[in-house]
Amino acid sequence: MHKKSIMSIKAEPTEKYKDKFTGDFVIKSVLDNDVSREQEMYNVTFKAGCRTRPHIHASEQILIATEGKGVVVFAKRIKIDPDQITKTEIEVESTIMMEKGDVICVPAFVLHWHGCIDNKEDFTHIAIRKRTELDNIWF
Image (tube, rainbow, N blue to C red):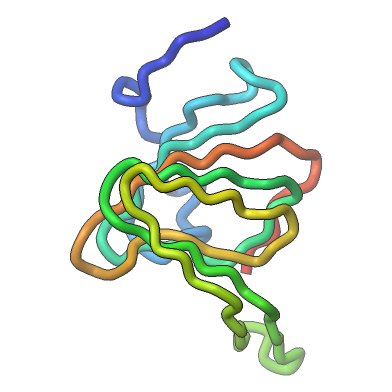
């Protein structure tokens, strides 16, 4: 059994994750593999305007808003042009706003992204999900 304070956990180097975000962010691994072999947990602060890139997880992801206002966007479908692989079109299914205290469960294998509502304020959430052998798929 381990006890940690999110406040005292050091931020991870952003270089490891920078291709997964659209701007500046701070990420702290709250539950690493040494503490929990089943769950992973991150405290993520999205600096004003930052969001994750669209991605898919192989397990459900719980998002708990802890500071500021944010957004989670669920995609219905993604269209990729094979001749211009970097050109993609994403059809949005739903957009959910989050504020401090809100909890959202992102279903497994659903394309989504999350982060700040706008360029005016930071947003922080805790992200929890079951570890899997499958890597996330990022777009």
